[in-house]
Length: 226
Image (cartoon, rainbow, N blue to C red; front, top):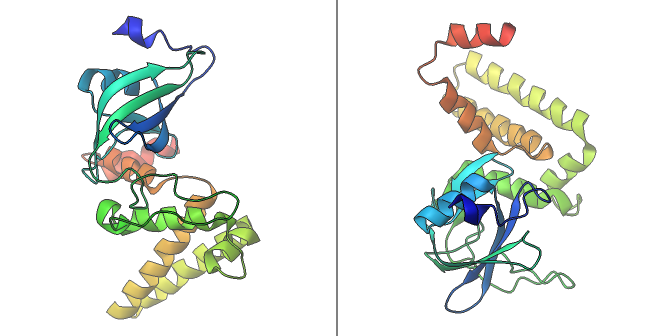
């Protein structure tokens, strides 16, 4: 196994670009990255594992959605720094719910494929909202509040987070259940905008919360103060 992994020119790259192609139709489904561990898992299990730059961890394709990729072949390019894998795709490959990630014509901006599965059904509302915010980064600020907020920069984003935290606190103090929920949603949205501006996936927040399980809150707080 190590001999195979060492065929990659790791001195040139830290992450291996991977082109993913449907083994039957030959359609290009997506492009992702593998580090050595992800490649080893993929070779061993014949199920695609990647390294997520946004999540900063290994992820099994389909771990949330069940839309896994069964690998049939691995082909390295002539420079030993790009991989082509051919797969059987269960469900869809793209987080938008489309079959392929390559659905937008660059010159015209035309969308050439339909959504097959709701992204909320695949990943939940938080991850879907985060991806939507990321997609708004290049939108016209006059057509999108999210794009406008992102275009205003750090101070405006932080001001909104503080503002929404204050409104949530007042709603909580007033014991107004409807307003508590409404303001919590506003606060969550603006925190996600702040995370997206820094390209920090909410998955990394989930990882931090998972790290704290079975850990005393007092001990965790003291560890940050040391």
